[in-house]
Image (cartoon, rainbow, N blue to C red):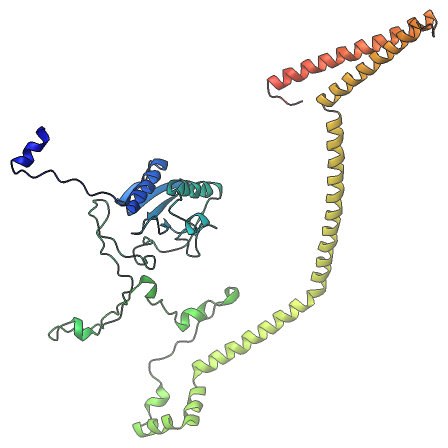
Length: 392
């Protein structure tokens, strides 16, 4: 046998590819099902991460499918970007919380699950939720999921894997900057997540300038120096600072504070006058409220009467429809025919005279043929209208 010669001459046999485990085969089967069901899916990392874009109501959404290491024994992590509001999503609008994902088993079909998710999105379109523009896995990965090895893709920027249990703490500047390097500006603090960044604190001037109901008020300008205090010595200033009553008395005499107190009193007075005017309008408001309630009750009664008349109109319309008229003509023609047959039997049995027989028999037969002719014409008209999809 020729295939034994390389071994006989000391040659090494070609190495066979490693056999796939049962878990790997099931994982590959799920990936193939996903690819077969969705031709436009993009492979971000082989057998690990996939992305499926779709558009609904002019909104393009990317479905990110992350397969954990023990998949399909572990359920996949399905997220969307940008975050949306939908009954199948979590509160943040990032992760899919569908029962098909929560109850995922190794016997489930990932391709069909994603297709059912798309069908639900088409049936009930999601709404864009306010959130940051970062991708869901950029700063927050699902808990308990180890990072995967980064792959070199030309269309994605490289990003280092995130550590799940890493704690971010602000380090002293002295440990980060050498002693020979000095700067006038303080070092910026370190933050672990974007959500930890401090929000801007509004100033008192910004808060007071625009209040509720669009009321605008500007605080008086506080001077840099106080002429009343510039003439005092350091000892007098120190004594004043130690005596709270004297300091408070000096503070109350400031013209800026007097202006604020005056403005406050005027504002309180205007609010009281406005409240009195509102109380005077209460009787007319109550009368109009009662009028609205009476009109609503009248509307309810008229609506009930209208619905009852509409029901009656529908019944009459159904009874006068072409199909109902055709059925009535058919029954009436059959009744006239039976009556004529009964008259003929009575004549044969000698129960009626020939003159009476001819008059009654001809009348019933004529009525029967007229009804059948009308029924046939009506049937032709119905067939013609149904052929052109024009309801009668």
